[in-house]
Image (cartoon, rainbow, N blue to C red; front, side, top):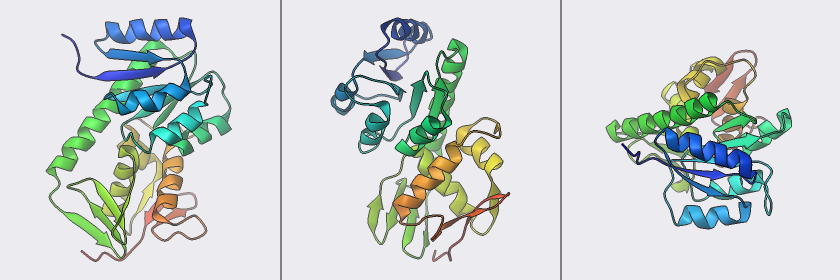
Length: 236
C-alpha cells in the first residue's frame, strides 16, 4: 500500500541520494529528489511534503541558508544531513530551524527511525491541537492551542511545530522548572543523551521570536544545572 507521506530529499551526492531514495521508497514513502539548494524554495511552494531531508553542503546555496528560508513558508519537520562532525555545525543547523541533525553516512535503519519518529510526533501534535479548546495569555503573550498560534501584543509570531510544542509545554507548566531531559523526551521523543543541543537551540529561537534573550529572559529563564523555567503571570 502506497503511503500518502511525501519526503523531499535535498542531496547533491548522486550515489548517496540513489541509495536513500531506493530505501525510503521500499519503506512505502513517496520521495522527490533535488540536488541544488537554489531550487528548494520553489519546489516546496508548489508541493506538499511531510518532512524534508536537507544536506548541509550543497551547490548554489548552503543547507543552513536553505533551512532559514524554508522556515518562512514551511513549518513541518526538517532533518539536516552532513558528513562533518563539527558541533558548531550542529548548533548552526538547529539555530537555522532544523528539527534534527544526522551525520553521514547514516545507518538506513537510523534514518528510517528518525523519519518515522518526526512524522509520529507531528501527527501527535496535530491531534493534540485539534483537541485543545482554549488559549492562555501571559501579559502581552497569547498562546492559542486551538489554532496553534502565538501572538505578542496581537502580532502573530511564526513558530515551527517543534518550537510551538516546546513553548506549549513550558507555558502549561508555568512556575515549574522543567529539566532538559524531560523536555527532550517529550518534544523529540527519545531519551536525552546528554549532548544533543536541540532543546537549547529551540529555546534560543523561541526567545528571539518572543523578543527576549538569556540576558533579558522575559518569559523563559535558564536555571543553571536544572533546566528551564517559564515565568509570567497568567491573565487567563
